[in-house]
Image 1 (cartoon, rainbow, N blue to C red):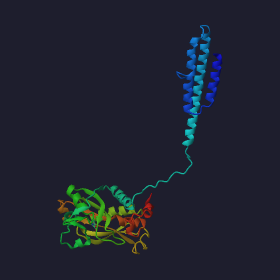
Image 2: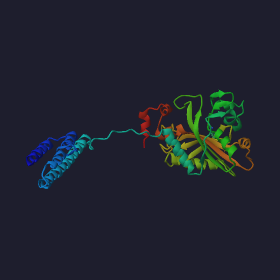
Image 3: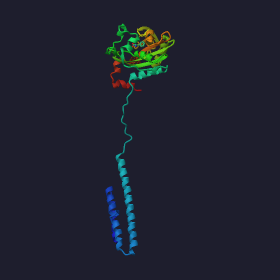
Length: 340
Ligand code: PHE
């Protein structure tokens, strides 16, 4: 029996030395330590021994069993380490490799300038209102004092969708919508897209405007100029001032074109201001009494001013863009220049 055990121990060692996979380890367990394994068989054969021999032999077999179990555990741990090392090798990443560049988007220059303009006026206490792009004749013209047969309708080539339904030609209908909803004091901005049948280097059939409207007691043209001075100084980031020239709009009286002193040459004259020292930036005026009346506001008590700024115009001046088409072509080489 002792002989048998010796042989078994040698067999075990030999088998273990060749274990290099989980399957081989499992078959080692089955062969030696399993219910029908060699050690269990030996235990069974103890029955054939004499009473005196049994305890000593039983102990020896037990020792062998404990030893086999330990060897099995060691081998299993070694296996685990080997597997972990293999996995680490396989999943290794080179953290020194340069990362893949992901391109990020940026705001469109029109959006950038629009936001900047809104910010300047928010600082003066204005609120923002947005009206519809599809308007009716009433809001776009008639209630702004532009009757159906008024020659001023020719000033804005209009896209009609149906009889009396059109794409708004300016943001001024926003004035009517706001005055219908609110009573003075009113201080609103109406930014948005407008449409005219017009297209060349400085005109696009779709462009953006920002309307401003202030209505309260005692509002005058001076208030308009004061606020616009602040606006141009902040938007062009320069010590500039405005100049008002008489003009005509049916919905303001008096009406003005507003020029800004040239921020490029300081007013001395350069190519940007066409050697005049001044650049035209917007139109405005004192809200026509009839327009106030059309919205149920008493012109004997209240007065107001309004203005309309072309956002493309401000963006082109600010960034030195000479062709409006660039703003709508969506050429990334152009648009990426406005990343901040
Ligand atoms: N709506 C006018 C235009 O588009 C601009 C304007 C707005 C003029 C408000 C006066 C007052 O030309």
